Image (cartoon, rainbow, N blue to C red; front, side, top):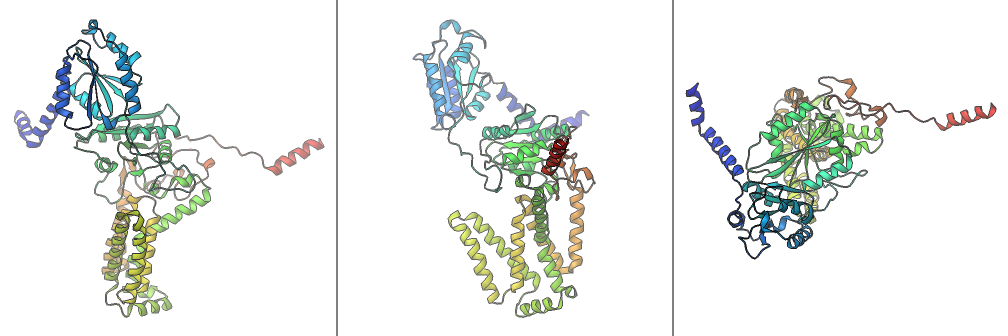
Length: 541
């Protein structure tokens, strides 16, 4: 036992983990020195290399008991709140009798109740907490003769205003989207859900970035096991940096090697609020407008926020259209290759003659022809995304038209192949979420290769393992293909067919906790004909 323990300790990875843990403990346990000059010299050493770090003294004699200094980073704070804070500190007088008092001293009480106009004030006792408070947009007040400091929340600076989401637009519905500021995003969700049951759990991830991560859920609606599992996975992340929600998603998602996403990302507050009401949980990351939602199923990626803002029959039609577009984007090129090369008897004679006449002068087989056209479209698509917006759309449209027409006239590809590739690409744009659309784009090439080798049998060889994989996937304990596998008839009211709101009395049982009741039974008011008949009968009486 002892030898095994020594061998584990001597492993390089374990030694690094222990050294990192010890260094963290030492940094977090390093107390603030009562000497103001010593604390300021440490701050100057750590943060003073940048031109935006500011130290403001409020006394002519730094050795004076009760002398204070204000430390902050200029670009991370609100200038108006800073002016109010400095006016209060300049007006405050500190006496020498307050030097040896604790955190409930006259100095602290005066600063907390009279001097500081800000609302969020924390007492910090370690040097590392001082660094983190300043880098998080707080102003830190250091007091000579006291072994603690005060962190005043006056975060501000230049921030992007709330705008309409660029990746998830709607015709009918709210036009506001998340920003890169996590406080603003939390406020947007609270405006939608005005309930004390809305909870936020705070996490700080990233040794260098110290990124704020918030886990949001509705108590008594979300599944406690999902909350516990999500918290466990977030706490297990140990990395240098978190710059976007994609970092978090790759660390905590199920089946990281699968092409299909097991978490949904959205920059719409109403989508996040609706997901929380269904019993799901959301992860908000500071510095990105995209929030993560889990657990999700396969059919969540074909639903949009606008489906719930218009009539249920129109929403059902649009959802069915998205599923058909998904199948077209995945299978159409491979089916065209298989039918024209192997199963030609399945094509009507007139259409087959037309296709063969077009292909008579093309020098390449159908598989190579399709691969060339698909790769060309992917290049044009990527160029349109990366180029400036002023010319990006023009390049993508003109490039596709000109190159496609020139390729047909030059006899390199057939006109039917251009139509198939173009319709496939347009169908891919119908899929609402980029993660699912990207998975289809990659799987399409694999199915094209199988169709070029074995025809329809090759497509079946690719589809069967794909369905098995989808059925076996899970998202935080929830089956990816629920409620079809396993079957839950009560949860089929909000899938491809969206039932009217008055019919959806319960939440999806596979996502929510014990509180599955969404609303009471709806009672329709009497129709005008019934009301008129009742009125006539009352008159006759």
